[in-house]
Image (cartoon, rainbow, N blue to C red; front, top):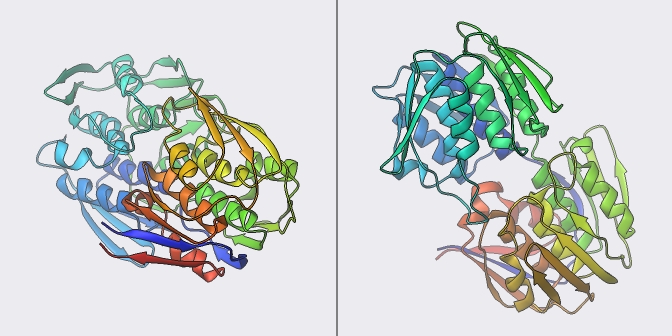
Length: 418
């Protein structure tokens, strides 16, 4: 199993290009199931989760073809609308094929998914939404088995904000009979990006980016071409990499407004942040202050940047309180940061970080999930000596060649094959 070895103490400087968003690409790729024919997607990152999605689509009688960062999906009716366990277990986002298969073919058999162990993340909201739209659902043998002659529009109020639940509901509702209204819907840029592609396919949707989305069902959709939105989480991670090393780093090809919560916190810490139309620059700070953070649905501070921000706070002056408001088990990186010398006290969903710049020292650590792996790489950049991050298959699920991008900024970092 590959690992990444980082030798700390180098200041990062320069410009780096952000890739397309994993979290936007996955639902958009599954949306292709809604219409036969050739769908073409640009700015698709090369990631393990994208590979897993392609494998699942091919199992459903689709074809996939890569040309650089353009991915073409040829959709044909599957022999059976089944997403098997052997494929779904690799990636929790596989549940997003439930809505498209059910609304298109009147039935779907989708294995309960796997993915990062950062909390229970139940599929209850997905199942309840399909039931509200008229589907009969059974959970049997580890599979969600759904049937409906045709889904019927309904007013659905989510008990809590759910990105995946909103995306599955959108894809199910676009071919449903009548009007569906989603209340307390997710506002994330990745949800908006999905709506943009569904609309390009011929869907009738209003209200994306707000808490109320209205979908008027249509009889059929058609394939189209779409460019995936830039990855705001990768952009934020690279920005924090510049900050934690006291460097000057410009992240190009991003959407600054998507990172406003992070920008505000970095400025609160004392960093200078310059924004362009499609770029963000963090400028060197001799020292920075701690800042409290609470993760919450967009546009609040993203849970997917919590671990990386925690790494930054280990080097701050003063104490930071980090509250995880989305997942109940997303502090598994804390003990690995402590192995590097960080002073962190976890308490249920709150972690108290007592910053002390220069106190991290290299050690062997283990990545426990996707964003935790990024936080350990960032901590390694600031640590004295050599840090070896193991189990980086997590990192490869969501970051496109992160070590090469960091090396291009001056980091001493390498991948070591198992």
